[in-house]
Length: 225
Ligand code: DX5
Ligand code: ZN
Image (cartoon, rainbow, N blue to C red; front, side, top):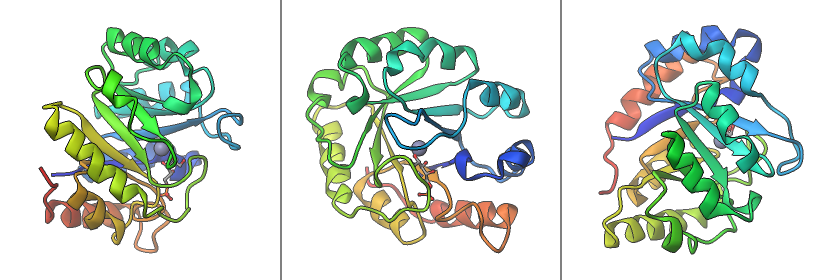
């Protein structure tokens, strides 16, 4: 089955706690926090204080997607504020191996995020450290963008790499994950779906119904093994 992770930057940030409670009841699997610094991506979102403020509203895992420069400087800060999973962008740090090793040493689920144009090559050297890979299916920085179809091939190649090297790495997809793209990405092997405005938030039917429908839809489909 695929795991559902609401992208909370798409939530009504003034009612974040309410949305988290609705989604918790809606059987989602983890919460995705998009962290932006205005440099690595031309946008700002939320920080560690906001994560801290809702940490005890749910026991579901918190996933921090760091779209920031020098992420290695902030790993401990995100661990301390209650994150269970952290992903860093390969394009954001010259010391990827050291950064991932440190993340692993803190006990968090260690994620490697790749922009649409970035290849899978580094996995040859850090595949034994990472727990999940984030395939950006849009260019990072904004919700509401259009799915980049060439990333489907990358998911396929990653699944092949994981299987042929007997690795235990989950595949997270992030960006315009919708009722149209979910079957495509799951057929290629994606098993963690970051869900934003394309299938969960800002839907006329409301968040509760959107969460229930999405859960039913994804549970009907199998992830490629
Ligand atoms: C974009 C973020 C995504 C985004 C998803 O940089 O990483 O998590 O919020 O939102 P939609 O589903 O609207 O693309
Ligand atoms: Zn994200």
